[in-house]
Every structure is written in structure tokens, then in C-alpha cells.
Image 1: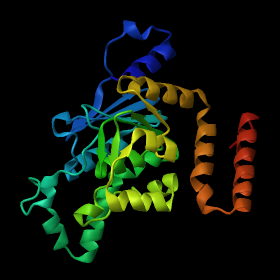
Image 2: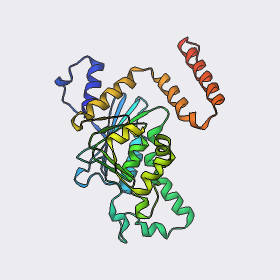
Image 3: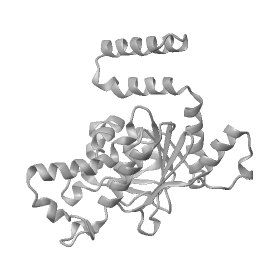
Image 4: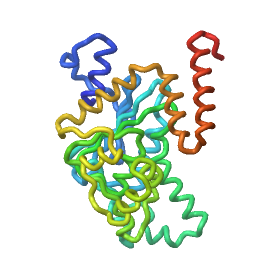
Length: 283
């Protein structure tokens, strides 16, 4: 269990976190992914530090399963990784003719017909989509390298807390591919088209300082303070009423797709629901 999970549980029960060292039981622990749930907080941990938490189709299937296993009580999902690197991206063995054991190689995928290829990539993308569900707030705590698919996994979350040693990079284009794991939309939304294009086409590293300055990250802290910073952010979110958080998130998520007047109307409608709910007049 992370320090965040301990402290939140202790706050709820009026205990000192130092008095309780028992971990929350893992709901899922397979293929480099572990899910633990403690009340309103779920923690997804990447658990293959020896290989810098590289990703594979089996890893993505485990992430999809983790999303499906979340109970309705969960309000905040923390994504973290063991080891020095958050995730070094896709296992390079997928680029070889042999591929990853038990999985289709890129060469096999290329031989698929259009419908099959599209469906396969869509399935992979599912591992990156559930983090932005309207009833959750997801926080990625990112240290070290977050490359390619690792970068896109961090981008899949609503918020990012980064260590001062973080190194983001989008390397797909330099390999003759494109970022296809849902990372392009949030990247452009966060840093703008010009910077997003330059980051993707050059494959360069984005430091913690630049990540915060560009809006890619919410805060950067020393590596040994990463868990505490994520804890502070999660605690602040949990302090607000859940329905108000859900309505606010929906308003902000939809803002870019609405005109100014449409957004004004959406604000009025959301506030009407909140006022009636607070007055006990809701459905």
C-alpha cells in the first residue's frame, strides 16, 4: 500500500498512519499490473521495474481488467510505478518478426485485413480510455522515463504529478509509427498544436520543468516527495462532495467542444442540478 492509501484510511478512522502497516489486499496482480482498492482510493501500480515497466498486449489487457474491477465506491485512482522508470514504453520485442511470446507481432498485425487491424488497435486503446471516466479522477505519479506508450499512459490520466527526474518522450514517429494509444488528443489539449507536433516529430525529452511550464504536468517535486504530493492532491479532491466533482469534471471535459454560449448553458444546467440536489429536490 502506498503512503497515500495509508494516510487516507487513517484519516477516515482517526488513526496515526505510523500505527498501521498492513497493506490493502490486491484485487488484481498480473502481467505487470497490480490493483489495490482502499475505500474511495484505488491504486494501480506498474510492477515490472527490472524491465522499466515495458508494455505489451498482456499488460494492456491487465489494465483493462483493472478498470472493470473498480467498485463504485472509488473516487480517485492513483497510477504509479515501481522502480526508477515509470514506463519505457512498448516492449521492443514486438518489433521483431518473432514478436512477444503468445502475442501478435507488428508483422502479424500488418498482414491483417483493415477491419481486424482496426479492431486490434481499438482493443489496445481500451487500456488507456477508462482513466477519464466521468465518475473518477485519475492521478499519474510519474518518475524517470515515460517513453512512447509510457508517455501516453500518463496522458491518459486527468492529472499528472511528476518527479524532478521525469523524462517524457514520444518516440513513435521516429520509429516510423504514430502515437495511437489515445495520447494525441490530451497532448494537443495540454500544450497546444505546435508544441505537441514538435514533441512528437523530434522524439526529444521533455523535462519536469518544461512539463509544468507547458501544462503537461500539474506539479513537479523531488523524487522522494512524489507519493506525498500525490497524497495531497488526492486528499484535496476527496474533500469535495463527489457529485460536485463529477459535474465540474464534465463541464471542463466538454468545454473545448462547446461554444461560449453553449458552455454558459451547460454551467446553468449543472448548477441547477446541484442546487436542487442540495435542497433535497433532486431525483
